[in-house]
Amino acid sequence: MADRNSEENVRDVAVRLCLEEEQQRKVDPNETHERSIIVIGSKGVGKTTIVHRFLEKDDTPKPTIAMDYSFGRKAGKSLTKNIAHVWEIGQLTSSLVSAAMTGSSLTHSPHHVVVLVVFDLSQPEILWSTFEETLSVIRNAMKMSYHDKMIEQLKRRRLEQRRKASEREVDPFPMKLSIIGGKYDQFKGLDLDKRELIGKTLRAIAHILGADLYYYALKDKVLSRRIKDLLSHYGFGTPLPDAKCTDFTKPLAVPSGTDCFSSIDLQFPQTRPSAILDTIKQIYVTRIPQESRSNEIILEDPSNEPNFNEPIIDRLRVQREEEISILLHDMLEGRTPQIPVPDPS
Image (cartoon, rainbow, N blue to C red; front, top):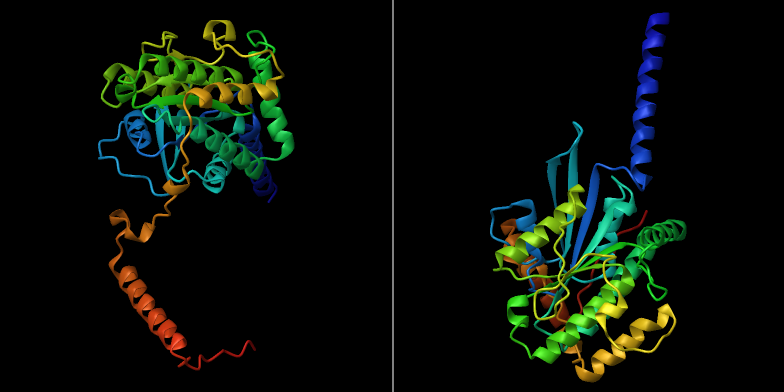
C-alpha cells in the first residue's frame, strides 16, 4: 500500500512539474519552441501565397474568407521540434485579429508573436488610409486580447531591444511588426518621384514603429525567397537574412533597427514621437491624395463560397429562406399567421 501511494505521489509530482513547465513556457519572453505569425493587410496582394510558400504547401491558394490557421514544424537543436503557427486574416477586423492573438496565447507568450502586414504598393492612393486602418485594428485587437500589464511588458521589452540603436523620435510598437510591400512588379512602373516618396514614407513608418520593411513580388524568385527566410526567422528562430537595401530604385529590404531618419531624408520638423506619424501623413497625402474607401466596403456572404459547399445544409437554408419570404409576404398583405408561442414552463 505504501508503494502504491509512493507511486501515485511520484506521478502527481511529475504531472505538476509538467503543468508548471507548460505555464512557464506560455509566459517566458526568452525561451520557446512555438511562435506565431499573424498575416493581415490588403486584399488580393498575395498573403495566402506567401503563407503557402513558407509552409511549402502544394495546393492552389484560395481567397481567405475570414481566417485560416495552419502550422509548420522544423527540427531544432534539441529533440523538440519548433512549431510555427500561422494565422491569416481575410477580413480586416479587430475581432478576428484578437482571435488569432488569443489563440496564440494558448501555447506561448505574446513576446513570440509577430504581425506581418502586407500592403499593396501598386495602389498609393489608398496606401496611407490602409495603413491607418490596419494599425487601428491591431491596437484594438491587442486591447481585446491582452491585459494592460502584458501590453506594458511587451512595450518595455521592445524598448530594451532597441535602446542602443533607437533615436529619440522612435516609439516602437508593443508587438513585433513586419511590413511587406506587395506587387513590387507593378509598383516599379510608377513615376520615379512617387516611388521615392512611398519608399521614404514606408521606411519612416517602419523605423518609428520598430518594424521590418521588405518589398515583394509573387513572380520574383529572389524577393520570394527573402520573404520566406523572414518568416522562417519569426516562425522557427532561424537567423535573419543579411540582405539590406535602402535604394528606392530597387526593392527595399530594411530589417528592424537598422535604419535612421538621417538616412531616410524625409524632411519634417522636430516634434514629439506621438506627432511624427501625423507629420509624415501630411507630407504623404499632400502629394498623393487618398481616395475614399467607403464604396469598397462590401460584405461578402460566406454561404456563396464554393469551398464551403454543404448540400444538406444548403437545402435546409434555401427552404428556411423560402418560408421566411412567405411569412413576410403574408405580413405585408395583412394576413399575419398565428405563430404558436411555446410555454416557457
